[in-house]
Image (tube, rainbow, N blue to C red; front, top):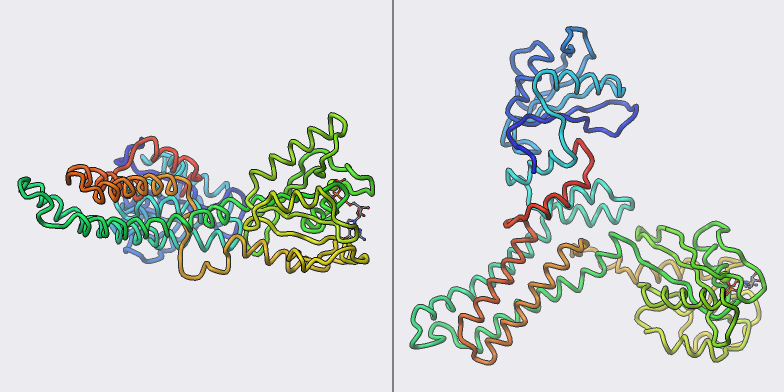
Amino acid sequence: MFSPDDTIVAIATPPGRGGIGVVRLSGPASASIASALSGRSAFRPRYATLTTLTGADGAPIDRAVVIFFPAPHSYTGEDVIEISTHGSPVVSNAVVAAALARGARLANPGEFTFRAFLNERIDLVQAEAIGDLVDAVTPLQARVAFDQLDGTLTTRLLEMDAALLQLIAPLEASLDFPDEGYHFVAPDEAGRGITAALASLEALLADARRGRMIREGVITAIVGRPNAGKSSLFNRLAGASRAIVTDIPGTTRDLLTERIDIGGVPCTLVDTAGLHGGAGDVVEAEGIARARKALETADLVLLVLDRSRPMDEDDARLLDAIDPSRRVAIASKSDLPAAWDPERIDALEASSVTGAGMDALRERIASFAGVSELRDSAPIANQRHVALLAKAREALARAAAAAASGTPEEFVLADLYDARMRFDEITGARPQDEVLAQIFERFCIGK
Ligand SMILES: Nc1nc2c(ncn2[C@@H]2O[C@H](COP(=O)(O)OP(=O)(O)OP(=O)(O)O)[C@@H](O)[C@H]2O)c(=O)[nH]1
Ligand SMILES: [Mg+2]
């Protein structure tokens, strides 16, 4: 993909003006290029040295602080030079140009981190975590990314891998003495071991949905019969008057979305057309079809039920149709006299006019995403990891079934090896070029 023998250079700080601008070099010629730019013969490792930099034409560029991180104790594992100048793009660009004139090459996006991976400073999970950390929009996203960077997932995978290896060793030994079959381990004992490994994998995967919601957001659809107060609730949660509100049933025709932050969880709110059994015009029918689609695909449904009017068939049907584990029933318009008792169906009372019940609702949404349980486990947030773990789970399930039915050891072993291979793919022990390209391409230049 990239040649790791060159010395690469890039501006590491964001584009534009700033207090300081950092230019980073990595590769075998880093130190000699820094010497050429500064006229100094050498830099003391890990010490900040104030020096004047000159361009290829001999004209001074700026006074700068230069730090030399010799291999292997650097971000990339190679010789790295970090040059901090005054934060003007003109100065940063002049430093880069001077480095290029002395033989450096402009870095590709993510190339510094890619080199760190190639030099085994970090594994693939950590490289992806660095990308997530840089991209994090909410503090919670940053927390989850940092946990991965800390190696939490890798540690869990290594534990599971070690457990599988313990199962594999006696099975392999039994293979060497085929006459006696399962000589070194009884089939039911092997089966128990595999079931235990399967259970820890299941636990890890159970975290994945939570992790995805934190990383990518909870899709929250606001659903209910016409005029129930959906758009008013949408506007209230969004903190802006985005959706049209009128007292005419059927005001909202199309889907309307808004990104909001609820307790650190990014949330995509979706306002929908009122659902009812009666037939309307073509536009309304299409709006209802879209509302149903949103209802199906949402992670969470806010079911709005007008507390000021008696419940009708449409309300009852919706209450029945949506799984309680993914819905919050809301008794809306709580500032008006009540026509029914919200406690009966465990509905949250709320008013978009007074704002009553909004904090409780926000808490319910955040707790749905599992924010409160986040203390000690790092959820997997990455779809690539989830897909590979799911494949490992299939392999282990096959192995468990094979062991239980006394199938020859070879077959059990093949599935156990399959599961281990998936773990290796996650951490990058067996990287595939296209996977690497996909992961590092989304980085910015200079990272
Ligand atoms: N008093 C009171 N009126 C409300 C409240 N929420 C909504 N309304 C009124 O109820 C009517 C309908 O509100 P919308 O938010 O448009 O209802 P909707 O569910 O989006 O309606 P459709 O888009 O037609 O399906 C409007 O007249 C609102 O002013 C509330 O909390 N209290
Ligand atoms: Mg509406």
